[in-house]
Image 1: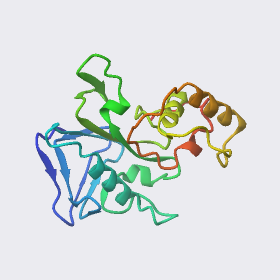
Image 2: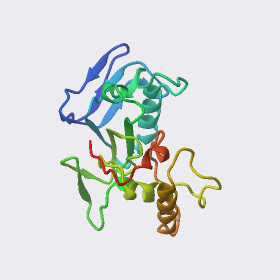
Image 3: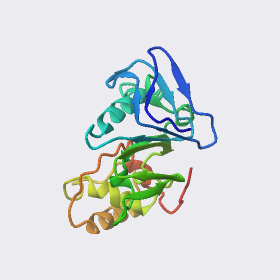
Length: 209
């Protein structure tokens, strides 16, 4: 689904992507106040591309707020049931799945090119990407593997954690140390990783959504 301009949802309404790993592309997602969205955009098992201009600035802060709102962070039992950018597919198994997001420049390797391909769509370096995916998928490629550990390590902005990650295996701790060792300097990626580190314990079981 492609929308050239603003994707506007009036207060009290909702829009749902048909399942089948579809992609919604828009210039902006307007649901009222970003911190208190008045409607729902349900990605189900799909993806979202928000294009923007340098003059207008990145909407990543708004996207983040809308995802956090939908996640229903105060609750410890029920998630993805509030207004914002949500996923009813993730809600069915919120301990393993969620909605991840990031700047295209932080997620993709543009190299010397001005565009890259994500989810079968060509995107440029002024795009915000979001998708239903496994928790811990920091690269937004639908898998959780060592590359995600490296991406998470780039964004701790500190050294290794002083204590072990609760519930993680010894193998995970070794991989985490190796991930930090492979990152010479911390980066500045804006990624939502709800429960991400703990979900990386079984990295050998590479999964794709």
